[in-house]
Length: 465
Length: 95
Image (cartoon, rainbow over all chains, first blue to last red; front, side, top):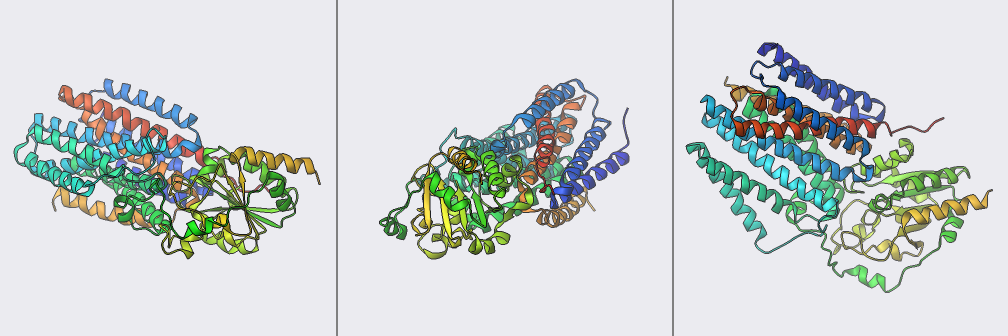
């Protein structure tokens, strides 16, 4: 059975519309799930319309590949921990990148046997292969850093920028040569160089900048799909590629603004050295930090009017989100108002904290973004910082020599009391010392976040007002 | 107008749509946004199907296409399902 080109085009148009509606659904949690279903239907229509294409005649390998892929995808989706979402997304981005490369090369080989090659096709192919290859290896490196298979510190070496520039020029030259001669060797070399560029582009970026990296690679995977669309003359691929590419670009922009650093600085700046530089904060450190016990913290919190909890990556690492929910329940039973403050770059990907809190059954209307929540801190009795660091560091406002100077922060410093839950005094991923530790109204509660919070929950239960 | 130019029209207009729709996404749903855009970028599956399904395809092309079908299918099925799982978690306070 097959359908005409026009029917297929209409089907693709329906898919495109459904994908746009799917993204629109994400404007609010109440419409989001429905939007996702639209997306599923859109994808189903596109797949069926393609299977019915008159050129698709040989189905065995398609069936096997599709079924195995569907199975793997379904199992992973059902079992992945929400704390591992950044890694999952990185892995999936790499698949799109690699698939785009393979489709480009496969299309070229097929067209060559048919004899329908032209310069335009080869140019589009080359673009698709280069972007796809960079997306692939870049995402693999991102995955490795997130999964801690390799160090999160930036890998920097002399002449790095020069090397990238040379490789870029070489890739372009090889693409031109390929276009002119159809040389498979040039094609292979160009692909290889693009793979290497993906690696060298991402390894200098530190773990704390992962939200930008993930957004960037999300964007690239979109451009790779769009390039594939140009190659195949498939408008649906082009539309999807544009949607995804712009989405990733917008998220990258938002992340960079939230850190007050340019995208250039993030990608080429080698920020977040594990070495840690001495700045004015070093002098404040002479004053020493106050440490507190679980009992002390609970004493202040049980009669509070309003508590603002600031979760960070440390909470995710400690898997403490469920304990925090328990803690919130205990506090609310005592008529304490509990809200959560999320900084845009908290966690390892945009919106990561929100998902973790949602997983712990914390209602989303208590989880506030930086602009909504900052005015609340000055009337809060306690700010409880769980595994977050730079996002509450006043050095971003007060210390021009600090690497994070200028970054918008959560105003936790303005609460009457500040409690930090930290494992130890080791500096965070950015290596920047946190001035908030040394403020008079701040105390640190040392230990694993999950254990500490469970301790606080038990203390509250024990009190039983 | 050449085919490529038509494609370019589509691309530019789609970019505008993407820009305006995505700016409206609430920050609390940024992670599902990334996962959803990931899922729909599995649309490269369409390209993979065309490569693999071609009767006259050579051996190398078929193998490349097969791997692409596999990878893209993981993205599509895994992507939409994980987004659904995440979105099911977002609840408002019960009255």
